[in-house]
Image (cartoon, rainbow, N blue to C red; front, side, top):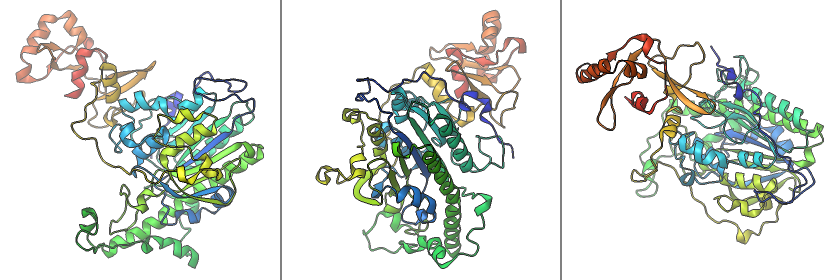
Length: 526
């Protein structure tokens, strides 16, 4: 299998060269951080994809338990506000509910023009980079991310294009490399190279496990072929939680549950298979987290480093007769693992306060030394006091919102200008750049390129063809710029016959490959 490389966009491979502010010896800055001569804490975040709480997936991660969970705090009541990948990850990055950052589904505004313009500059990565942190991102970003740009706020960027994959991803250049191990390897190298520098570090490791296609590392593909009794109890944990329950009294449950039919024997076998495969993918994550923490210890940075561990949402396997998936508001989908280790956090402690995925950003700002008023525009709240056991429980949240769905049709947004229009179009998969000297996939007619931050649209094939366009003013013109300029009469004749033929063929030497004029924009929406 061919593996595409980030070498097609070199800025995504290496370090993003941006001037770094040294945060020491300052009295006050625009981000409302108090002065400090001591190096601020490093922050390392582990985010998993689809990891559940109630199906006992954490039980197989013994190294993570010993080095992170047992050395810090467990949040027993941690939830996601939107149990869907892209909305939840957007909430973690911004500290906002989905209805405020407008990423309501895995497709709607997921790395769309509004997200790029309005919300990417407001993520915790952008805030910390502006305030002197060296920031690094490894792994899955957002579902619709196409790899053609580096989001604002990251000094080092190694992100996956699209959704989670373990092999044949668009990241490395060796198909035998396992993606979880690639994330760990690059994170280790980055910390090794920057641990002794004066700037504090923010590192985000977004692992693909245990998301589908549930491809385990070759070392663990046969791990449960002969399970012990203890392992068998974990392998069947999904069958102990309202598994295949579909009988309800009228009005007892939501219509979605009352409409479910009993699963077949094959469905039950499929849930068993998925439970085993999901668990097998987590062993590589467990190894990676252990290696990261050991390196931090070797660099004598453990006393000045915070570790946070969570997932975008939970998962279900047969609960209420729903074979597999997420996005439901019930505990198995909305509960998430959430652990934290760091200075002044009591080892082995447990907290029962409600904490949410939207609390991640304000917590990071709090750790980095931002003042409390930096949280004013956020929906989340820092959980640092909760983790340390100093939070007044009477002043903590008692409820929260879980949401899912699209915007109502009557919601109005400002019409994008030409630049935003092209940027939004270039986020679509059908406009993906196939690479230099590479043919476009079948049926793809145009692709996008980026030069000095500006998007341009180009034709895929070598045929120089034009289409007569009907512009907003009602005038028909030839879309071939050079042809229109040099042969206006010819273009006018061709335009008049467009209603009959729809297409007009022009001389190849006159038809440009790249379109940048507003007059030609309509061509790409036909």
